[in-house]
Amino acid sequence: MTGGTRLIGEVAVPGAKNSVLKLMAASLLASGRTTLTAVPDILDVAVMGDVLAGLGVSVVRDVRHGWLGLDVPDEPGAAADGDLVRRIRASVAVLGPLVARCGEARVALPGGDAIGSRALDLHVNGLAKLGAVIDVEGGVLVARNSGRLQGATIWLDFPSVGATENLLMAGVLAKGTTVIDNAAREPEIADLCAMLTAMGARIDGAGSSTLVIDGVDALTPVEHRTVPDRIVAGTYAVGALMTGGDVMIRDGRAGHLGIVLEKLAQAGAEIDVLADGLRVVGRERPRSVDVVTLPYPGFPTDLLPQIIALESISSGTSLITENVFDSRFVFCRELHKLGADLRTDGHHVVVRPARRLTGAQVMASDVRAGAALVLAGLVADGETVVTDVHHIDRGYASFVESLTALGANIRRVTDDGAG
Ligand code: UD1
Image 1 (cartoon, rainbow, N blue to C red):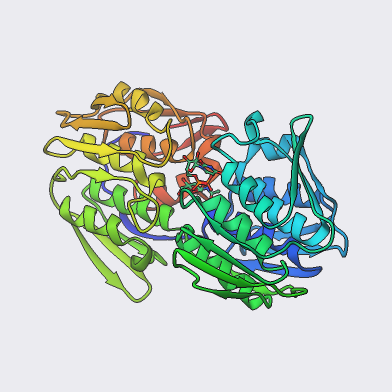
Image 2: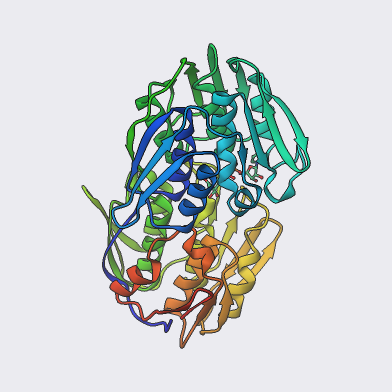
């Protein structure tokens, strides 16, 4: 891509990656046809579809219309394919539904994590509280349960998104009442609660930090529309401000972007909240703001790389603090190659104003870092090449096409290289 053009025009926000993958897993809770709409055209949906197909689900997809049909058999398989599970961590979401419905689930440990490791301890301990017996057999996490799971009260040490979802999907079919306290409150969890409720689940407190679930005997499949992707919407909002552009983000939900819009407004964006989306205008060089990531409704960690890219061209110094993941700052090294002035220390990064960013070849290390490098490339002098763009495909549908429609000078060269 060649930097220097302003993003101007309109972009539509598809359904959320972090919602649809869990909605797909939730289909396992009921035999018959679940239909999902507003399904984004992203790689992770295809991989999750393959995970479900391996469990006996027949998957029919109309990519163009964002439609997905999942025909779940009466007795789904119990073992999720190890190679696929390692490709997307979200596939661990089949654990709860499978153990609740079939009495057994076998899921390869993502990345070979040890049992009780930080990454899965909340999932595993919560399922054990509901009565599942958990073992590791040859690198595979096995959860077994004879009869129905038994409702219990679970306090999460940390409001983990994935653990909340897994325990929610296990609790809806458990006997009696399950309480998940210190639950994650992300809009994608409220979306999952909405689908489960339509399926016949009894859930109180959706979107709050205490979920009370009265287990039912069986659920029925439904049709459900995926909530719009707040991270994709936020990415375009940051892009509008960085490029001094004017972008109408259709289906961007202000209600899900509270602190993000507040920070962008402090940084100088003009934001109009409209009935069908958001309009974000950047008129001047952005002002620096400090940002701290936290579980929702805090600032989302999935917008951290994009905000660092913004800060790198802002007028002052900013302090960015990451509280959710350990390794998110790998991306700073790549941004530095474009001329950003960054200093990391533990889970903090200080971003000083760079006089300008200059095009270079950089590598996308994950989906959000990749999107952030593209945004940086849009304001860098000269040509920027982002490699390993398959990471971006995991979460952004038609990213290059959408940016081109907004006026960006960008093209995709091959699967592994974008200009
Ligand atoms: C989900 C999102 C991801 C987002 C993250 C936080 C999907 C597919 N991914 O990931 O994009 O960045 O939420 O908003 O929805 N942890 C534990 N023990 C556990 C589980 C998690 O210690 O059992 C820790 C993790 O190591 C991490 C933190 O909790 O440091 C957050 O993880 P979690 O909220 O579970 O994120 P994911 O569900 O994996």
